[in-house]
Image (cartoon, rainbow, N blue to C red; front, side, top):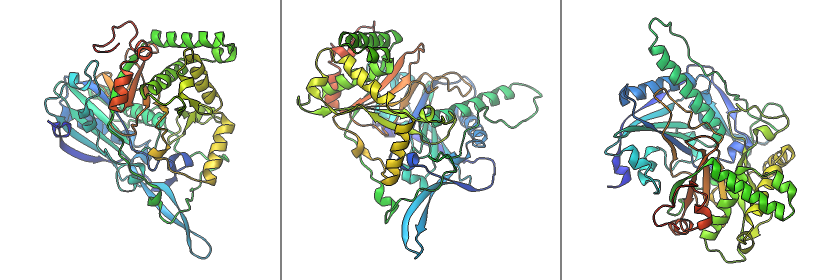
Length: 477
């Protein structure tokens, strides 16, 4: 049976925020750059609650969602494009804003016939294709937010569990903002269940304890103004592409394994005389460099083939003055290791420490001055990111184990697992999530072509770090 036929939609409804005056919020450079990017698709797998029923569960989530939209009302808006004219009346460009008129978000109730939790998270296997059917708007990109909801949630009933899939327009928010919104929603959902069990409790308005900052950032510190894109038609900037067939695996890295990777890199740097690089090492650098080296090796590149490692990075705390953590919007860039390095050089013995230090230098260089320089360069020549921006010979690291995913409890327990849909996946992408067992562990979602994944599964260096202490899966070295 095709995975898409295993999931059937039972109902769908629109959830709107409490009424408020209509206004618009202009998109910044970071937001507009995402107009051709897929919607973010992240979801949480839960054990099925003993009570209430899934149908009542959908109503419970919808009620709490309506409450949290009181604070996060732009999530319920739509994008609007405005024409800009010169003094002669000629069109000189277009700007995009969020029209906050309470248009609403969508919540979908679906059933996956015969699918169990074990089917969704099988041990030592690819993420099954049925997971893609747990996310609506599978082919939508940011520009589609002119017509489509900016946020959709699908609650999929499994035989013994519930999968809640969140689909968010990436031009509206980045991962930091999305998980803040989801946890605020979960907080309200838990509070609603607690109130329901307290007899005689007077009804009261539920709001998030940490209100988002909705005012958009501008480089000069003043109110953000609409950014005018000089083009004949805004849709000309939008590209839609279908990635090649990919395999995706979820791999666990224990805290002990990450510490061992870091120490190995540190010793290599000390032996090479790079004491500064050794002192600045982090576990993120050690894991990113491991993936960079091993994914590159899995591709069997020509020795002279050049490659880089890129990573998504949060700008909020790096700006001066720092942007508040609760800023709701996009505030991310992608940093890259310095000049591209030859594959033969990267894969030499003892280069794990060098690669980790290269990632570290890229992160350290991304300070307030660098961020503002990037914004100025973008303003001088605006671009919309497309799949062509991905380096087919490089490795891209996204998401963050700092996001509070495992604590996102809507009132019936912590999630069993985090999974994503097909959106924004390319050959050589690794997304990092907090490990389910905590303690500094990390779960990594790795996407590669079937050929490259098969080669990675035979890589001794890589597999030695996965679930350290556990035997290698059958068929792996």
